[in-house]
Image 1 (cartoon, rainbow, N blue to C red):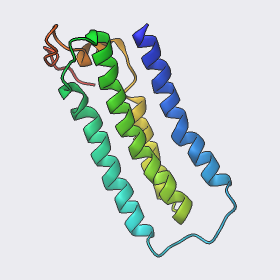
Image 2: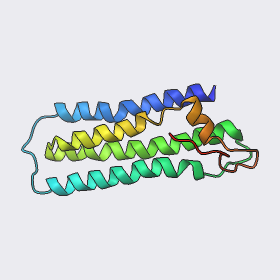
Image 3: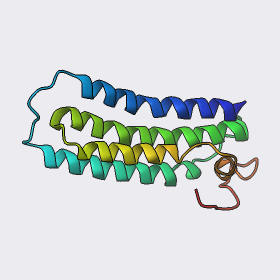
Length: 144
């Protein structure tokens, strides 16, 4: 049941940046701000890279709470990773609203790909699950 909930949450998080981009592209067009376009692009790239990296590195390091059980800990680890990818994806959309720089859509696409690749597959679920009742890191490390 927890895996099914995880899959639904993952899918919902995929929709938000895409829906936000849809809104951003249909807003009344105003003159794009070129004054800070390059700066916003670099901030989007750096923030995206940082958040996507954290989404891979941080979740497995979260300690398990004994009362929550393995499924709850695994779901929490996924949620942290997904939230970091979601945060990475939102800044390029906001910057796009301001600048209309199409390169920001590419940054968004890369962030969305990072989120897509965090699908709660059987292999990834097992990898993020705590190894034992004490909540240690998973005993083996596989690729994503």
